Image 1 (cartoon, helix red, strand yellow):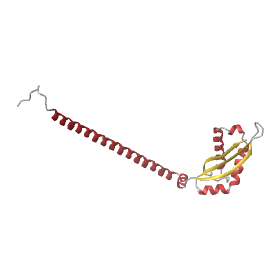
Image 2: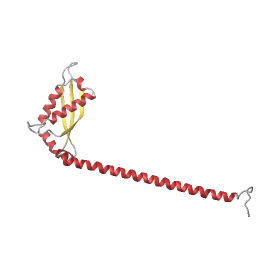
Image 3: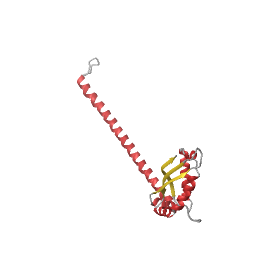
Image 4: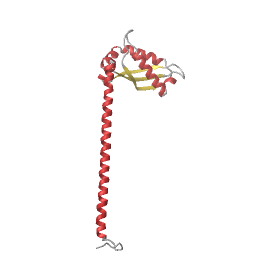
Length: 179
């Protein structure tokens, strides 16, 4: 039997063949998408794990190059609150005073003990520094940041003439009032 081109094919046979062909192509697309997602996920996981390993290796190299850095990495920073200061500021618009309290971030328990044992020197240095300020110099954010840097420098100055600097890394204000 010859197929007559004018004669239409059985619609049921065409309907059954079409979903089978469409279903296979959808299946291949879904499998391809799944492989792509898994590949990207695996690549991202490798990248983050590999990146973390590189970052962990650098500090190890730095530890060997400097014993001071090794000491800093052995201990987490410690915080030493300093009692509040109340000082008269340099006159500008009448009498003004400053009340300030702060906490020192110190690198290691030995340094904390050293600073505690020399607290009279620390307080004297900071008192002299604060009493030489004008309100206009320290009432802005930049002024406060500069003051924190000056306090840090004063506290880091060695207590003994030929001694090492104290390992203080930050000054954190906990109270700051100008009146």
